[in-house]
Length: 480
Image (tube, rainbow, N blue to C red; front, side, top):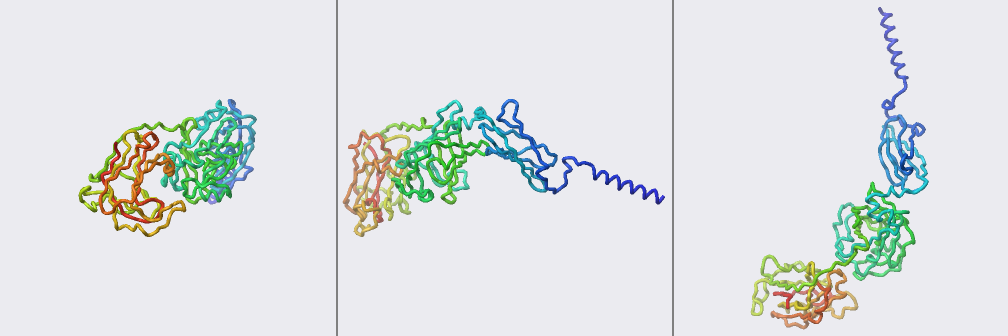
């Protein structure tokens, strides 16, 4: 009996030993073993219908996760994938196998003999270039007549939270002279400008270019002399939704970036963002449109009367405040006597900023000044303001350095943004009597033929100096 038991045990041990030496299937590969490159293989076979489309297949028995770098800027995952190569050339395909023991990569070269533009017949390529049949390419420019065509936000944000450019907000700089023509055949990019690009002081320093023009709007921004090369190319990654411009090219605003995340790409809009290399934590947003669609909107003329007495809880005219003080703008009448016995008036608090003012811009129309061309208001100039002490001035072009007993009304074109002053017309009422309500009229009938004005600016105390002061006005109207 003892011998029989011993014989049985020995037979079982032998059986297990034979089983352990048997060839292993793919899913029995030893745990935590690092494969050798020599153990891996994949095939790269052109498809029967298109030589530029390659079938890639993992052929080894070792289990794991297979990823591919196709050598054209695209990465994919899977044991069997297709790779498309629209352009002739030699591409290095890298296959990586990830196992519990680590990762191993092997490569093969694939040579594509000829271009196949039919592979670019995709919505994104066609929207950007106009399609392979459009040999002249498609030209894009900044959408200057609509807000948000140039914007700024934090690098981690999905929207431009900090600032958005208004229509024509960058007039006077080179941003609107930039043209980008994308051609599908040859993936060519032609960039034209007026010999300058736009950037801030960080960008200017990074470029190391001293031939600059400070922009009319100031704020430390510059036009920097920069002539693009004759020819560039572009790479459109439809998987990652990015576009990369060759040779350091960029969309006319220098941030040090040449790769842009595509937020939207349609036949009518190319909306991209980039992370600035020359500024920490900033992302810039650009919206471009086809050049032929960059047409100034036709804004109608309207003779609209405006009135505001500041008595109602909800104002009909909400004046925009620029560099004004922190006191409440609607205030009790400081002198409720004849000429103006109303309860509430507008408090204008001029700060030590050089250009304190309030303004109103019409929405959707320009002023028809043929009939409605007079601004009227009641004003109160307090004597307690300091009208004699000199203050700092914005520059040597400012002739007056003290607070003035005056009020100026200006009509401007709001489309010009920070440059609206360049074509403004103004009427000044100076040397006004203090401590009493005065009724004033500002007559703009001399410019009744102007058709570009849509903004009213009110400025007390004169501009360009840093002398503060308090003023009041009431019963504002813009009428016949």
